[in-house]
Length: 201
Image 1 (tube, rainbow, N blue to C red):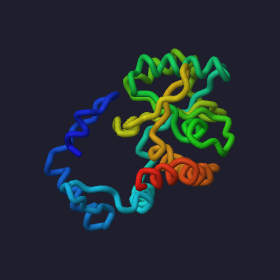
Image 2 (image 1 turned 120 degrees about the vertical axis):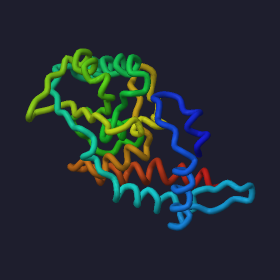
Image 3 (image 1 turned 135 degrees about the vertical axis):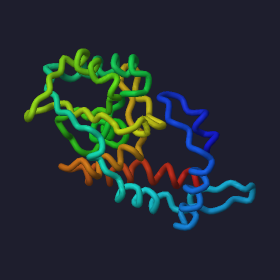
Image 4 (image 1 turned 180 degrees about the horizontal axis):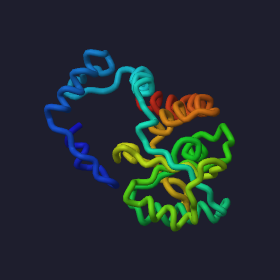
């Protein structure tokens, strides 16, 4: 697990100490989330149970939320966000409902949701011709507490900004209100469960 952090591409995420890794693995074993393998490694026994545990402990309100209005629409906004993605090098991604539009479309929602690293926030405002508003927003920017939200992000079609990992998308959807729970369940059924079933075969 510790070596895996050294292989990550994209935004740097601080490498955990071996002590922290051992503590996490021990806790996961005690909670019966893991099963030991013959080669000394381990694998998830019940990914759904672990996902629910994370979902229930997750706090979306730890991410700073800023509401924006932009006159850019459709292809213009997608192009502006793609430029931001290229500049940010993995520190910007579609989030929540907007990520789900690529991963498991289910709920139509008029706002564009994105994660933007704090250091690229000003570039987002410039490229998106966006203005912060108290109401009537059409873009929701989440400034993450840490870079973990960008971990294993997904590339989308050429010319489109990437999206958060489907697991991150799921927990964000579940906590973002509106029809988020419905969209999260669709993502779980259409994308996450089929991938887990395939991996266990």
